[in-house]
Image (cartoon, rainbow, N blue to C red; front, side):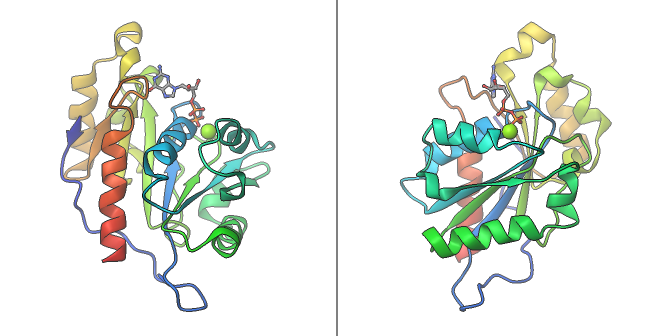
Length: 224
Ligand SMILES: Nc1nc2c(ncn2[C@@H]2O[C@H](COP(=O)(O)OP(=O)(O)O)[C@@H](O)[C@H]2O)c(=O)[nH]1
Ligand SMILES: [Mg+2]
């Protein structure tokens, strides 16, 4: 289910080229609370897009490499296309303030397996306030889920209100946790205006389809 216009002008960070003059990959960040489905969405996007795009993933974990290991186990991409950044104590810092470890991981991927069309950067376990630096990613997706409480869209916060795409994940669980999807959609719209919202269940047949279409549109705008 799609709400709003998904053809907004991309927020493109300043330098679209690598030092050697070639166009770098479009970089999309995925943030949101622990357990909302970021890694599962990354895995589904890799499966949906890997035949048509050259892609790679950077994960951020606090002390472990669990997200990267999950993606490796699931074999969503060849191992050399998955890179893990261990962020230490504060996962916000690595995507917002000191982004050097992430930038280095992306540049290494571009060198080793490039040219790349797309790099997905998953943030480490964080809360509702973490957003990516515009120096690190060109667009950001914020992932929340229906089991986290249906008042989250109403409460807002920078991720919910300003991310380029908001995903309300796990709609299959709504009946079990008493979440009102229509209300979540309306609250999200009130916070976000024209910015798009996708309600999805990765357990359904459509799965990540709407989000994959949104990514395709961003890639088309990036390479135009
Ligand atoms: N029922 C249901 N479970 C999901 C869905 N998406 C992800 N999950 C599960 O939710 C848990 C947390 O997902 P994960 O992607 O690891 O969350 P992350 O911490 O945001 O990266 C895992 O057990 C996933 O299999 C969904 O759409 N529906
Ligand atoms: Mg994860």
